[in-house]
Length: 288
Image 1 (tube, rainbow, N blue to C red):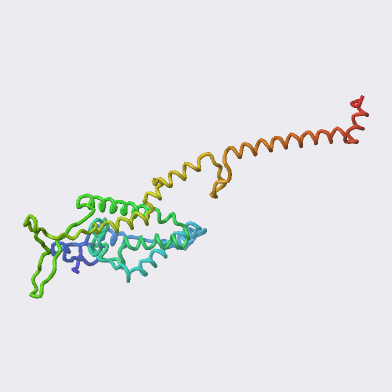
Image 2 (cartoon, rainbow, N blue to C red):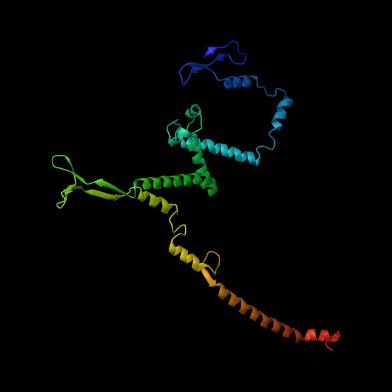
């Protein structure tokens, strides 16, 4: 910190060592601009000006501003809460290599910005019981799992589904002895090989089953296809099991129409025999 008589808005000039090269570096221009803006900032001085400024607060905070204030308070609270779990460590996390947050800014934060955002979104989703907040995160996670499954498949295809390793043992003298035998008929020396399934097959099966990517989940097994074909031509009510076939439904509809015809004939007969209606027709010449 040095005296700076040329600056009318601030009496000192600041320098510090550059974190990249270690050479002395002056204060950033935007820092100087902020100091000048603060020095030249003036508020109302008269009673009328102060009253006009006070009236600017009428009707505030609005409901939207209250929500924003609550969000900001929660954001700062989340930073303070997660600082002990995810402290700001530039280049200290696997995601730091592709992170676009400035390293100098990150060093001055109490917590990792990206980890804090993830914490806040998850916290808000569970607090509001709204899983839509987690859709981008779950989409990225599912895409990553699919990429991992593809890499596992490519590795298994390249290496083969089985791995052969020579059988070996350690002798009493501490030497490694390979398992070999000689064919008595031909005299050829054969090495004993241990055959094991590829170690990535089990993780691949777990990934497929937990993400509903098996053939049964996708409806590609013969049994599932046969069951789907049996459901064709059958009516289904809601999410329940099939209730009746199309033939049974058509027969039931025909019976209902026949019963409706009988009911209509009975209603017409009762109408013709209604004494009030008969008297009305006679009075108006309808009964002659």
